[in-house]
Image (cartoon, rainbow, N blue to C red; front, side, top):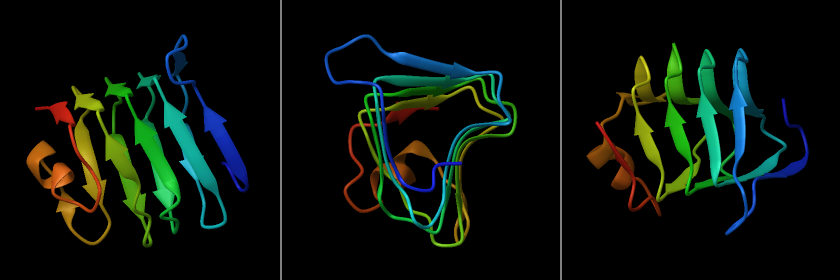
Length: 117
């Protein structure tokens, strides 16, 4: 669980892969998290965002997670751009909106260019 500030991955650099965890990344209400060129795969949940809007997911691949790719809880709202979200049991769950499709994800706030099923 990130409770402060974290940057995972780098733009233009080699990507980071997080796999085999309960939650690949978990961001709580006091955190600022940036994921760039990161692969979240084969976890229970790729990323869980709880009570923060200071999470940025860009150029990532979120696939093969057995419960959720992205899960928002209690007012969490990440910004997701240029990310592939597919092949998760549930690709995106929004605490106040339920399951979302890729077109619904792209319609949220500043989200753009995401691909998936």
